[in-house]
Image (tube, rainbow, N blue to C red; front, top):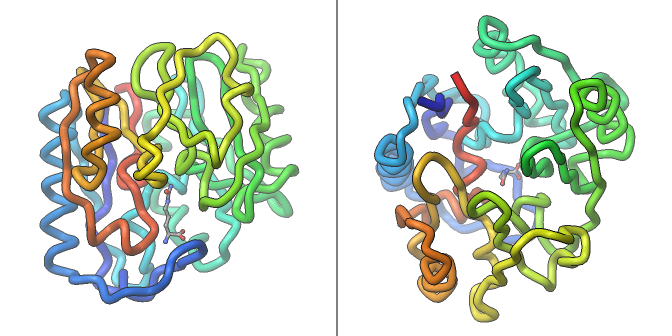
Length: 254
Ligand code: CIR
């Protein structure tokens, strides 16, 4: 059973970082309810959910995916490109130490988990405001001896690479062609988001299906047309913090 590490929504989420969207008030109680519904969806798809307590002084700490990249052989501790998010990382390191060899990204490199898409033995990494070329090179030197390939994939118009492209199933990706060029994923089956739902490229694959926002019904139809089971979740309050479904958990094999 995969482990899904989550962290409760911080009461300070209203002060979150925002890059591509305008600030709107976030209903904290609603965000908490949506987050626990999301955890239930992970459970239904076969994950064991381990929830960490909220960090009242770290507004973005619910977006735990950005703090690490956990492979079967090693956990890479991220160094977020935005300094406000760096204090989120040490607790995650302590959680992962009993289960993996933990290797940090060191200064001056930066890396956020949202920029790393793992597909089999390939790590696609998006250079971004949050993930530097030096950070990508550090990942390369950690994972190449383990048999992985690292491929830098440029993208535009969104925060992280996984806002533009995510994995739906073995060999199948969901992407927005306006944000990332499909040519980088040769040999894989590519599903495009519905043109009316440009922010719909973030789906979370685990166990027997994908967790996917209920906000994007037309893209959901495209996913289901591939025979993929969808657990739809309402994460509208977390979307206001520029969050998505992948970023609210860190999933790894036991
Ligand atoms: C941030 O700007 O860092 C947060 N407000 C949102 C992070 C979302 N992370 C992700 O999609 N991996």
